[in-house]
Image (cartoon, rainbow, N blue to C red; front, side):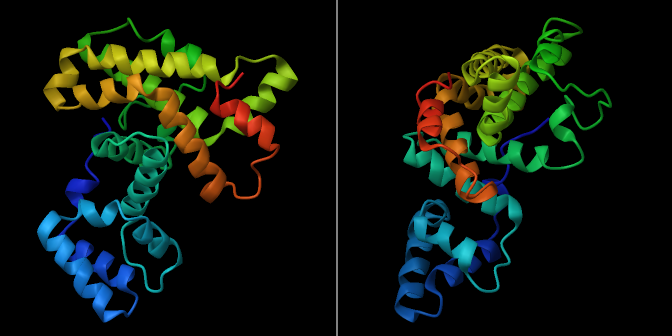
Length: 237
């Protein structure tokens, strides 16, 4: 089970390190950032675009990778009008976990079965007990968001070469997966009902935000035709 725990994992030392990175030796800026931290909490730093830049370009960065992912995801989601910290936390948590040990293809850490296609996950939606169905529905949303958010070029190429389904197909299934998962009692039990529902409702916007993140930081210079990128943003057809 992937839970949005990145923000909660940030300790006092991590927050003060963000102040240090932001100030970059400027004492006045350091005092100002420290005052903001004390008055408003760490979120005020995590939302500051200058902190995102400092994490990418600063010297001696000691911030955990998960926090860096959160800051980058939060920034691109804000740019696309999705102002929901819990949703950004969840999305960043998915990206971090999906980057480890083929987790992107498994419903959970202890499930050895791999699913490489959305259709395979869809077949699992109504099988098993309540928890098994819940896990399959969450994974459908996670997998579709990961695939369409970070690898839209791969999907576009499959559409051109093989007549495969467009990005909008995966968006629909991803949104449906999160919506069905949010309706499960399991979602309320683990405290992610509202997060799943929020991402379901804004799935397309979150996907486009991740496209921007992918173009900027994961595959820079490989964004391809700007017209094709625009088409992805308006519907992925």
